[in-house]
Amino acid sequence: MSDTEGDRSPLDPMSARPLYAQLADVIAGKIRSGELAPDRPIPSENHLADEYGVARLTARRTAQELRERGLIVTVRGKGSFVVEQPPLDVSEESEIVD
Image (cartoon, rainbow, N blue to C red; front, top):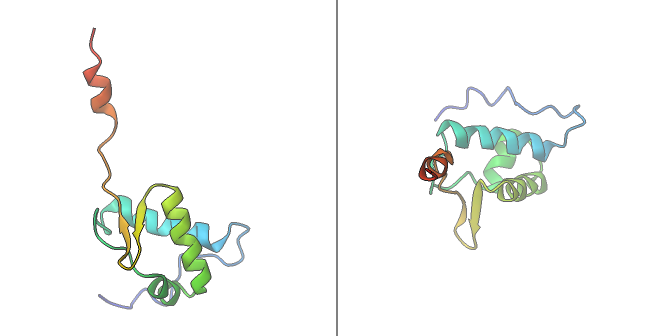
């Protein structure tokens, strides 16, 4: 774990797009790439706020956005975890055979 990217934030505070949505996209990308594995915790709100230089409330709204997208679940007292992602729904199509 290195802090070499700490100087360069992927968020654009001058954008019309809210910071929480930008940060949700960053975390969603890490989930898709496998950097954040299924059934494993995502960084805490405090950690996200510190790492990306946003307010804790912004980090909290980011978690809400990720829950709404179906990418994480939050367990009270334990934190937020990446949901198990099923493979593509191609298997359902292959089961429907005349």
